[in-house]
Length: 251
Image (cartoon, rainbow, N blue to C red):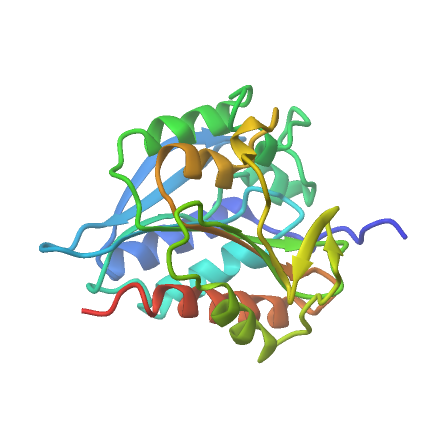
């Protein structure tokens, strides 16, 4: 069955709402690029003193509207508070979101472009990332049109305390978990994929592998099934992001 076209998404309206909510909750807003006349926004909040540095991104695939909407609701709710230093990129592919397609205007899957840097969106994003400090935690927020339930990828090469089971438990309050033994062609256990070997050897890099190679040693890509109603997907992703940052941002 072909994927259902994503619901209409107005990236300019979204950018205005994000910028207003971010400034109202203490973020600095930076326009690090643009696509299709829409700004690419980075939100930063640098609380004084020793704090964990947490990066969160969404909206890299234009047929996945729930992730940017979930981040907007979290920003409006004040979830990104003074307990951490925040780096948030809520909409990385505005043209794709406007058209309801996975790729950008040139047909490039941005989430496979972080090694070759062919697209202007990813080049601008990487240039911004290179100006930031390393992160203690990185979250890439997605949804999956082919999934039967929530699942996640974990990048944790140093064997740090894992958040994976807690994130799956948070998602389970709102949606089914994909308990398949193989997800996306990879071995999975209880909705968790831990890719064996060295993912840096892959020819095409998603954002998460670029982040692991250059900016963090703990990264999660979280995926909710697009077959669910939009509000349910947003609620699931809100819960998962909130749970991910909870143990990290304790004073």
